Image (cartoon, rainbow, N blue to C red; front, side):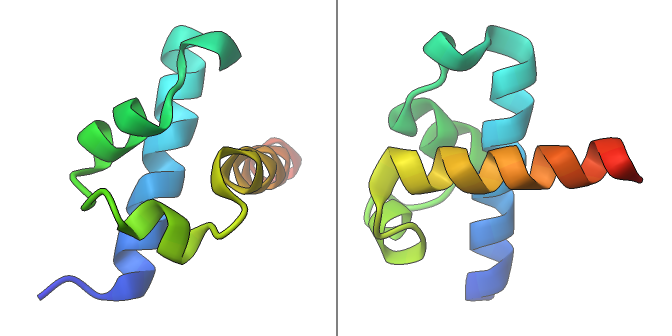
Length: 68
């Protein structure tokens, strides 16, 4: 069974990978869900603010990667 934290992290990782591959305009919630294999309802469970919250958190994670 997949833990909630793992699903959330998979969505963040997928969003970051798609952002690198397609650019900001090429990333949709559907693409993130398909890439991560997460169920549709999980996006708003983990990111109640929707696409904006996901984008903000991906941006934060991306900044941390640059600093490391």
